[in-house]
Each structure stands twice: as structure tokens, then as C-alpha cells.
Length: 253
Ligand SMILES: [Zn+2]
Image 1 (cartoon, protein in one colour):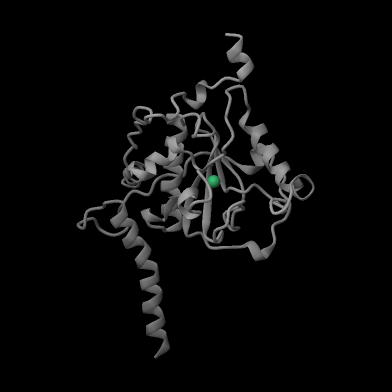
Image 2 (cartoon, rainbow, N blue to C red):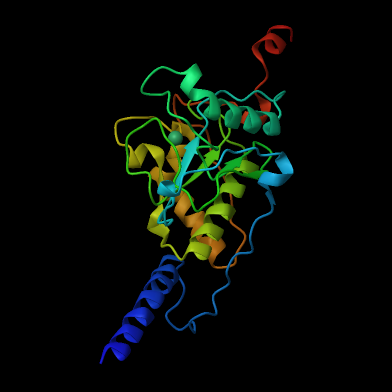
């Protein structure tokens, strides 16, 4: 008697995320199952290609991805910076936190805190392997979260259209690959309430008004997302991340 029940529950477990995904993607009820376009994987700069040198991550940190959580670096990006150098430095700093940082920030980060990092030019860099939970200086249940970080500080500058488009395509692909519903997508500020302004008001705005989810849904339907970042927020940053120069260079202009 066990076998039919188990087969049925396995079927239900397999079907449920697909149904949620289809609903989330706005697929018409008439679409035959399995016929929806699954977005192609975006092109990554792999960890090997950028020269990642992680330390081993403890097995206790293994997790099953359930959410996709967006971040900004929170560090002003200037257009003289090199994304590869930025990532290498972040990884090296994480491994030296016990000697560089004060408690409680002095925990050892064997690899990048995020699973993917997106440069202002739209390039996507592979970070920590998806099999392991991320790292954070804020308190929330880390297990289950896939961390996607956009370089820059969107309290002070605006993300570039290329950067946002890469985020949309990456998130759509992750949802399809991991069989997660559209509402699995959130931001650091939402999951760690009251603890951080991450991912910055000029990126968080697209999660407040549902625009990011609409772009992801478009992508999941096999369409090209129509990225229009709109005008600056009232009192918000006006400068595009790709136009931000170092203060010295600004002064000399
Ligand atoms: Zn964050």
C-alpha cells in the first residue's frame, strides 16, 4: 500500500512548483504543461574565470535554495573601478574578517557572501556555490536564500539598465531552474526588516511597485523584458552608476 501513496506524493511534490511557476509567469491555463519557454541561462563569468580562491565551506552550511534575495554592495561605485578586482578583494576580505573586524562582524567568510554579483556593465559573476547558504551581517534565517548582489550604492546612485536587465534575466533563470514561484523573489531589506536599507532606495523601488516582478514574469514567458527605469525618485539619486566618477576626477573637471 505504501508504493502508490509515495508515488502520488512524489508526483504532487514535483507538480506543485511547476503549477506555481506557470501561474506566476502568467501562463494561460490552456498552455499544455511543460511547453512554457524556460529562459536560457544568462552568460556568467564563472568563478574559475575570475580567479576565485575560496576556502572550503563547512557541510553544516549546505542548504536548499527557496528564495532569491537581492542586495546592493552599499559602496559607491566609481567608473574607474574594475569589477574583477572588486570581487577578488571582497572574497579576500571575507577570509580575513577574524583579524580585521570587531565582534560580531569578525566571523570567517570562506567564500563570497553572495551567489552572484552583477557589475554596472551587466556582467554577471558567479560567487558562492548555490549549494551553500549565504553570509550576512544582519540577522535572518540564511538557509534557503540565494543572494544576488548588484555592485554600487543605490542610496546615492542609480543602477544601470544593463545591470537591472542582467538581474531580471538571472532571477528568471534561477526561478525556472530551482522551480521557485515568483514571490520567492525579495530584497535584503524585506527579509531583514528594520536592519538595513539594502538594496538602496533607487533599486528597492522596483520591488515596492511590482515592476521587477513584472520584468521577471515577462522573461519567464520567453519575452525580452522591457526595462525602463523611469525618472529619478523625488529626492533620490539622479546619477547613473556608469557615470559616477571619483571625487578627485570630478573636482578637476
Ligand atoms: Zn544586502
